Length: 313
Image (tube, rainbow, N blue to C red; front, top):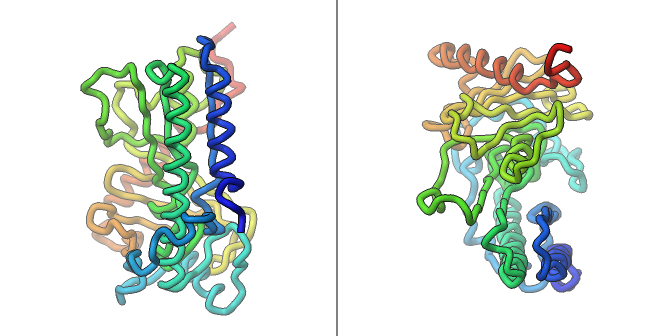
């Protein structure tokens, strides 16, 4: 019902462009964060973006078409809440969905993404018109994803599936060597690394006690990235407030839940859809043990050390 010109995506692009245009003749360094709420539920792109994509053209997620998938307890609980009518459809946590709801959510999300694309184009044009594009590093990332029907879920919650946790990070630096542009790196990082990376590139000293590492540094990437999630409400299917820590490396994802005797282990190479949990599979026990040790090391590496002294007096 909101006209496209008054929708948040358009408004934020308008204000960002105006900010850049107001500094057209300035040579002072700047940092501008442009944060769009979309793509996000509720799935309601305005105007032409509402029906730009047809739900019938969207894929039906695999969880609706296979018959050998047993959802883990915390996911089964979400499904059960929707089937019983107990799910909070106006909330922010994951809910179960039908195949058709998944297709409709995907189509509407594509509309939101296209509107974001158009808005990014406006901001980038304003940057170019300001004459500062050749000396400005531009980053693109997100805080999380959406299930969009995968594993028969919508929105997000304590689930640690790739659709939620693995978001892109694009770094565009006009002063990088020519052979480094347009490349795709296999290294992974975490949200807390973004601040450290920006400060390092800007040659600004990190604040004492600040966590994170420079993602652009040449050193070898860690064995895996740590993903943490804690929720204050009890979750259907597991009966506790989910506090889950995960490790994701180039091949596997392992998740450990506080207070529960089970967890999740997926081989992302042979099971990219994360549909076959290897936690209790005997053949996967050596991999599980090694990943648990790596998870423990990652926890230690990312634990808060401030205000511990950095040197002896």
